[in-house]
Length: 85
Image (cartoon, rainbow, N blue to C red):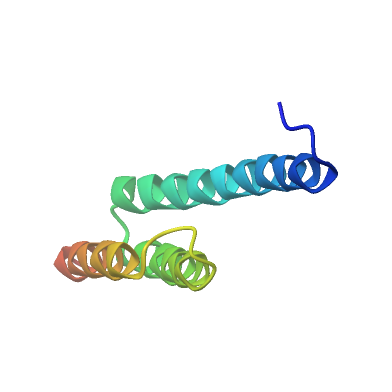
């Protein structure tokens, strides 16, 4: 445990940020799973827009690496395109 006041504050902040980042990653995984389980093209497109927005936001905030977000979006887009309407 830290003894210095600024180190204690940094520990509090890092715990808070870690919890927030975990929530963001979890919600991205949830939307992705819903998208991959759907068969309807229109519903998949709606979920894809939501997932890509969440991934972009997470990449901007350095929660997910930018290339990883782009890769995931690309894979999801290919899945949505493969669905028949």
